[in-house]
Image 1: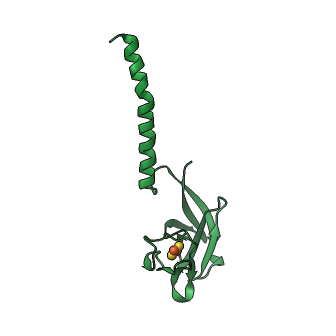
Image 2 (image 1 turned 45 degrees about the vertical axis):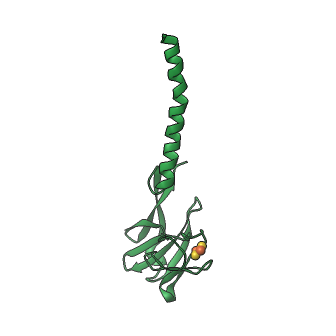
Image 3 (image 1 turned 180 degrees about the horizontal axis):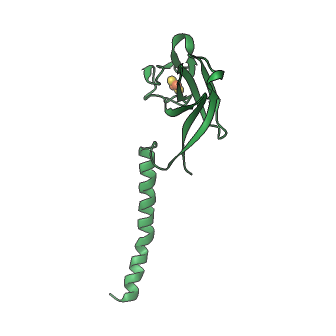
Length: 145
Ligand code: FES
């Protein structure tokens, strides 16, 4: 094989290899959406003075990501996605029943976001929180573009 033919055949495989790597990356991200290139943002959510124990607040960050914040104790808060894991409707916190409720198909989640009844296939996504002084911060995960 001549040198010119060798390099020609070598360069013919470059697009194939790049295409394979691209498809592999997309497949991994699809199968495991929580990892991949997740970008984490720490945002200020609320002051503890503005939410009583047992209360919740629906919030939207500047990027339009919706989440629900629940104060569960003196220095305890929980942050969960408001997107139902069934077909994506918005879930609501029902304080009197101590549960999340999805009105679309009567999906019910417990205070930890785990499925109690209905068609949702998995628990609500949750976010890490941190309390510094009286300020509550949430760590939101975004996928990089
Ligand atoms: S979308 Fe929530 S139960 Fe179907």
